[in-house]
Length: 229
Image (cartoon, rainbow, N blue to C red; front, side):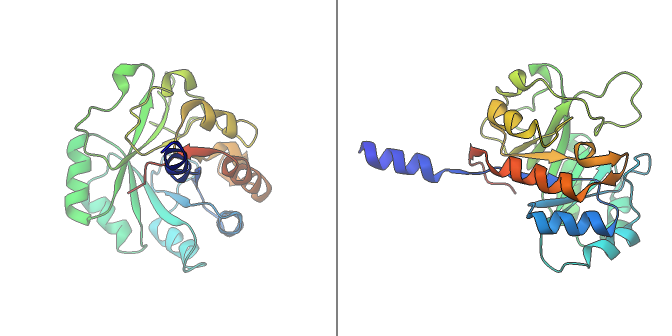
């Protein structure tokens, strides 16, 4: 019995998942594929230095028929905005900074998994048990004066996030680098990590070497599996 329990526990542990977000050029896209990341993020928020047009995203995505799942990032989008993107580029997941009503409408309209971008400062910011999102990308709340609801390179409180609802699929984000990602994943127990600025040499300029190092560092961490949508 003890052996069976130990084997069952081992089989529920998997390598951490990795999402590289804010990809906007060929070298970065190719690096994400070569490194073996699970998700590539395409940012459709015009105020971000990592913004890509739908047409540009389609050009990049067609470089590799397979590879990472495509995640489209949107901020408080309307249905028409998302539809216009999907008319040009296939996405596997929608990552949205918005509320439950927006998320529910997107799921109903497009039939895609929707992850909620979530800024957390206290336990009061944790999602409710009946939250409609299929998963979460969790980071610190944006600092005062921030022009973006996420992606501000601010490290979250890992101690706080160690208590994030365990039955939910979620990715740790916020200020992660190749040097810190393993510690963050071990401390929080997140299913994986999401990075953008931590693998850049300048805002929006990805480093293939840093991408490879980040994926390698995260892959060395095991976690209790909560399957993504």
